[in-house]
Every structure is written in structure tokens, then in C-alpha cells.
Image 1 (cartoon, rainbow, N blue to C red):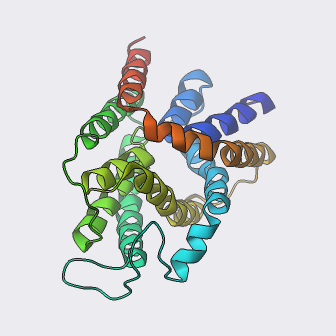
Image 2: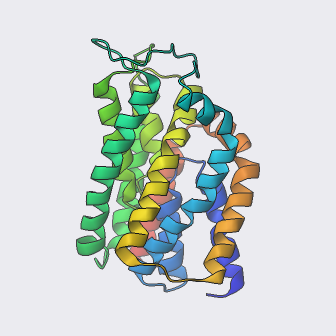
Image 3: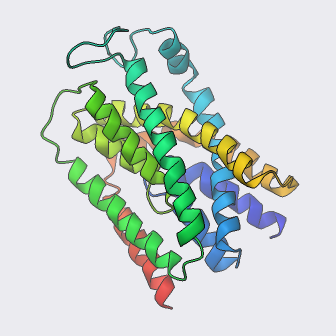
Length: 265
């Protein structure tokens, strides 16, 4: 790839990460289909580019992160560091979800990278997974629950669906916000919690990827990560507000059908 392609990758990640349409799936399709980059390398690049937008999220949510570790009352949740019969503290809610998503996500990634990554129908699979994301987004808007519940059961489901986002085509933000909406959280809280949850998930995932595959130093991929960070930081606020107001299930359906169409041609 030349420098312009790496710049374009950073732009895609910096914008698509904040929208529930799977930035990872789009990056894999672009790298593999249009630039003829092998699937395994495409997948690794798409994962590494999340570093840029993760640091954007850290800066954007720095106050919430500080308050979270100080066990303060953020997002309107009462301070409750001890487990009760139904509810747990917000910190423990995120910790359990993160722990489950890292363990299950690692297993899913290993299975995918070892058994599915060389599959000839990878574009078709990504398209189907995007359509599945769209279905989740569509039905989450119709949730009848009106009050959030910080339960162990809900934190488990949140971690489970975030783990699924290690598959390209499954939108991490789409899955986690859908689960939170199903559980009665408002759209504003769902998006904020979703991206707070992404920070440890992505950082630990990057460390795991380095341990598994080692590090190949590449100046250009660092440029992509830097551009993803800059673009991500300046677009996160605007795009999160946009994503709260727009039903992105239709976008997932359209992108999924388009990727399936690319497979057939």
C-alpha cells in the first residue's frame, strides 16, 4: 500500500468507529477486496487501527473515567460499591462485562483467525454479520423496558455481545448499545457506556494480539493510527449525537447487502 491508502484507512476508522456499522468489517473489505491485502493481514490492520480511536475515547471521556475509578455518581447512577440482591455498582457492572468480553472475545478471535479467516466466502460472511447487526439495532429501538438495571445478568449479556464484535461485520457499538437499550438504558447513556466499555476491551485486545502475532514495525500504520486518533477526537461528539438520533439498522442492511453483492461479482 502507498501512503494515501494508509491515510484513507485512518479516515475510515476515525469516522466509522463512532457509528454502529462495524468499522472493522469495512476496513477488512477495503483492504482485502480493493487492495488485495490477505485476510489475516487485513484483520490485524483493522484491529491495530482501533488504538487511535481508543485514545480519542480516553481523552473524550476522561472525566467519566476519573469519576468511575473514584466511585462517583456518574450517568445518574447511585454510588453503591457493594452488591445487593438485584443491583451492583456501576464500576462492578463494567468490570464484569469487560472481563467476560475479553475472555470470550479472545476465544472467538482465535477460532476465527484459525478456521474462518482463509474462508473464500469472507466478504459474504461479513455482509451477513452486518445484517445481523442491523436486526439487533432495529429491534432494540422497540424495547419496552424503561428503567436500567445494573444486574450481574445484564452485565453478562453486555460482555457476551461485546465479545461477538471481534468478528468483522459485527459492530461493537451496535451490539453493546442494542443490549443496553434492551435493558432499559436511555440512548444517551447507552452510547456513553458503550464507548467507556470499549477502552479496556480494545487495549487488552491489542496486547493479546501483540503477544500472539508479535510486532512488525511499520511507519505507515503508525500514520494511520495517528490519523484515526485525530479524526476520531474531532468527530466523536458530533457523530455520537448523530448516531443517537438516526436509525442505523437501515445502513447496516444496505452495507451488508453491498458486501454480499461484492462477493458475487
